[in-house]
Length: 291
Ligand SMILES: C[S@@+](CC[C@H](N)C(=O)[O-])C[C@H]1O[C@@H](n2cnc3c(N)ncnc32)[C@H](O)[C@@H]1O
Image 1 (cartoon, rainbow, N blue to C red):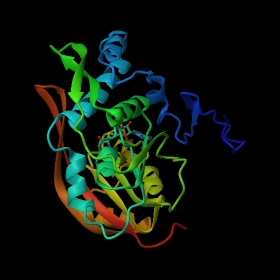
Image 2 (image 1 turned 90 degrees about the horizontal axis):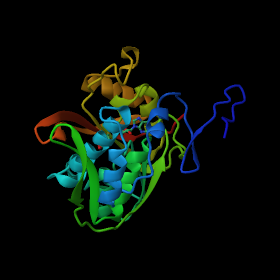
Image 3 (image 1 turned 60 degrees about the vertical axis):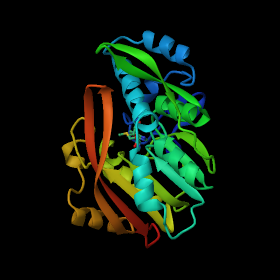
């Protein structure tokens, strides 16, 4: 498929035969190039796949990274998603029918949402591998994730996915947040956890996430605001203080109604080598329609 703007002519990528609309060349191609049709419910299949990856290669790193997220969401204690849900969303004063989890990764927040509310959830991510893991975790009861062992070897680690009620329905969508193939002003709640500061163009990513919120609906944002040039050119870095974030959200027709700081989150590359993030979280409500 080609872009409908004839001057653009961009040829879209595909995942399992489905076209992926991309607006920022480079934003999702690398994820799709590294995709593999692996079944994360099957430990032998995961071991076979990771054995085929060159240690230290980009594909091997992405496998390890996806596994780190799997352990963080399904293997260890009280996940960030659950804490954010309890703090901001449990008592939201609106009915949640349609929810988007943008940059859903391995699906931790979508799972929490679907276990708490009988709503429809769209889990959107650019990474086919992350979505395959999200789907496997949702089908449960066991998930096998790549884990770095003895410092050098990737092995499948089996995790028992916590049993939770299945109240909501989740649709997994491989797409680019800079051009989501979803209706504007359609969602009661849009959640972006640790996504905006991993975008090469955070203003576009934030604008698209904000535009999906219906009037009276909510946007929940959480990220460490840890801008880094690997993900985002310095010229694109966004707000850094609460006031500037509030001003930025107001430009998108959103009013900050709650915020909290200090949402800790750990990713373990190995049991002895961990990345620790601390996210700011902000809940904003759409007060005007998108112009
Ligand atoms: C730091 S992770 C956070 C994942 C998840 N929200 C969580 O809390 O575990 C960022 C996620 O954004 C996804 N991502 C990065 N660029 C994207 C893009 N352009 N469109 C959609 N997803 C993207 C990555 O694949 C990754 O899963």
